[in-house]
Length: 114
Length: 112
Image (cartoon, rainbow over all chains, first blue to last red; front, side):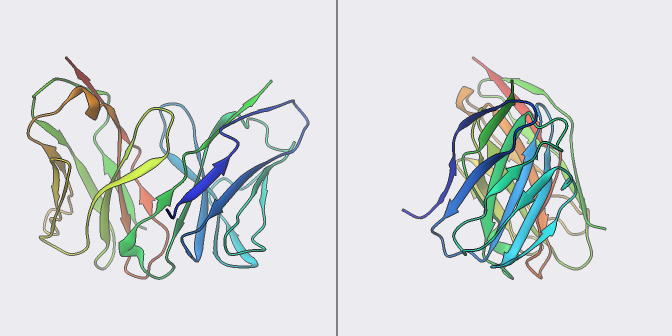
């Protein structure tokens, strides 16, 4: 079955550490996205990529970095510069240029700073 | 710019009650409209969608009609169940296939 896999499901980070969240899709989608969700709040866009080797900042990119070396993969690194990284992180993908199709989401990674 | 506004939650209903969650939007052109559902601790799942005016999206007893004259896409269900307890997000996408714009989400709690 095609879909998006996020790993790990739970992640713990010590202050000052960088951590990388994995997102892999086998849907042959061109575009991929990273969102942050805080308790009781909506989704905020961190980064998105419409094509391999290209990505753009979203609304809250500071303290995060991404890469898009392969169509299937869009990892997110939460750096030590992100002052409040505890949140639920969601990855999504879509067929570029076909907004009517909407997004497919992964099951999320819950990051906690300890 | 494009935006989506949902009614604030939480919405608390008894089982078998009628559900309406309001969603209005601001957009240029003719966006596609979506409802997503998020169960606790999970990602978002597409619930239904509509791609043009007067279209009705439906799934699992939920319905929403694309009303261009009122720029609305309200979610309805005739008889909710405890298993419908979740957060519901309204979203839009412009025709160019750009990024989805999400509302802030509405939490629904259904009591037995």
